[in-house]
Amino acid sequence: MKLTDLPALSVLTQRIEADRHASILPIVEAFEPAARDVRRAIDADTPGTGVSDVVDRHAREMLAAYRALPARSLGAFDAVTRATDRLFRSERHEILDSSQVPPFIKHAAMLGLEWVNRRVGSYDLWLRALAPLVDDLASPHLYELAAGTGGFSRWLAARKGPYRITCSDIETGYVVVGAGLAERKHLPLKFEPRSITELSHLKSVNLFFTSQAVHHLTPGLVVTMMREAVRTSTHGLLIVDLIRSPANAVATVAGIAVTLPLPVIMADGFQSVRRAYTLGELELLARLAGVSEIVSRPLGPVHGLVHLRGLAAN
Image 1 (tube, rainbow, N blue to C red):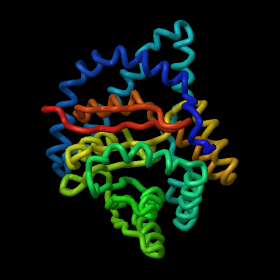
Image 2 (image 1 turned 120 degrees about the horizontal axis):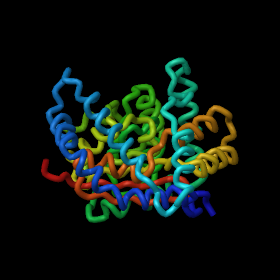
Image 3 (image 1 turned 180 degrees about the vertical axis):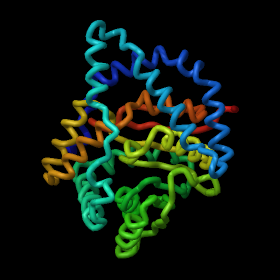
């Protein structure tokens, strides 16, 4: 049995999210004027207008309002859980994100994480979530965003499935390493450097996807990516990422420890969960982006899935 076959561990987090979701409509309605401004700003994409700052400010304000919603079913324990989340939540960058870390160490760590994901069954889990979303197409074009060295895309290409795959990351070093590994194994896979906010001119993508990357992004970047990806593709955007909860942090570190027990990777794994969004928060950001069809659910013990498709009229 793979570690990813275990049930979701963030049971308490799911309960809190269910309570908050029941009270989410007033927040969505209150922020609708700001949401219209956000969507127009992203669609206009005018350089030098401070679009990213505007989007990020509104996204953070909306998240703060959502996190203040009570989990009524927890009673007096609700205050404790909210205080715990405030203490646990962090925006501190991970060690390997630092510009002081030499590129070769970053690349080696990324390849190590790929090995962990293969070993524990993460890639199989993600494919089972992705495949049904494009099973109506004979040869779907998949586009991975913020892919690092593209471990999942290379694993997927090696399976010789029906997919046409493009893999991208904003860091050229990761792209070069991933492309070299793909070429060495003669994989039919294209690599290119690209920001997650520069998608508007891509015309042939069926499904954008990103795995274990969204926790690296600010709320404003997440909203921009959501809107750009959904607007540009036929089948939307699939996000797979860790879910923020103390239980998931312990499980993530334990999973790394039994496969690749390197202190820096375990430390970054713990910090990744602290930086992560909950499913409810990602859904809220998708509403800010104007997405009309939102599906979210836990995926395995520590991950969550969000599939976004279609834009509502502004």
